[in-house]
Amino acid sequence: MAGVFDIGRLLELMPLAPGAGESGDWAAVERAWGFRFPSDYTQFVTWYGHGSIEACLAVFCPDELMPEDAPQPGMHDLTEEARYLFEEDGEPTDEVRSAERLVAWGGSSTADTLCWLAAGDDPDTWPVVVLGRNGGAPQVFHTGMAEFLYRMLTAEIDPCPIGITDAWGCESPRFVQWRLSRQRSRAKLDPLTGGPRS
Image 1: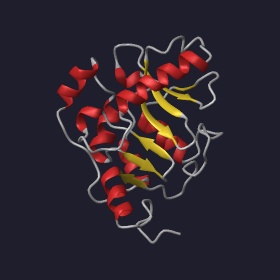
Image 2: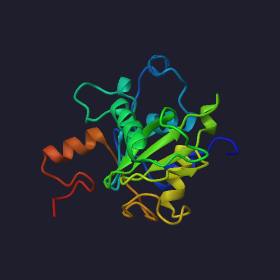
Image 3: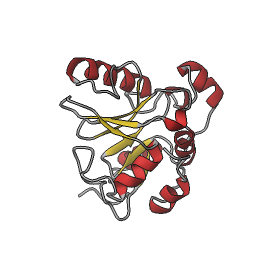
Image 4: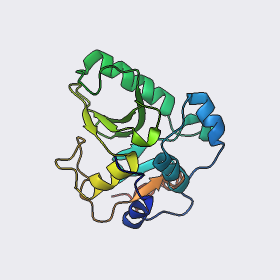
């Protein structure tokens, strides 16, 4: 991976909704996890936060940045589940030999899990790994998470790497942060559009 992806390209493609983003003590987060997070991910969390794209592709924030009433499962549980599922049903490859270096940061509505392969001392070089819901060999993409999302949303990654195509090649992708989604749901509105439920 050559350098850190310019998240401005993602912001231009997928504009921010009011109230998006999460803040907190990243030093404390990284002490809890035992490593530094990739810089494109921390930028994504700062701008967008915890939420979903087109109601089908979720991006998770570290549990340490989230309030107690935030949606579950959290990033810790997602990571433990991804490691367990890979050990049970995954097929090790030359790049992904074991589950211990998988760190989950997202998931799809078709039960795919998006991870980093936390190999090497520089988190900005960690590739993205997609674990399919039915196990098998993982897909490895030598990009950061922000570039992976951008390339998936613009269909530069072809075929679609997850089991649902609602966000793949989407001309105007929408990210809905979890607080806005909850607010709309409580008002009996569509969480994605904010309009009446169809």
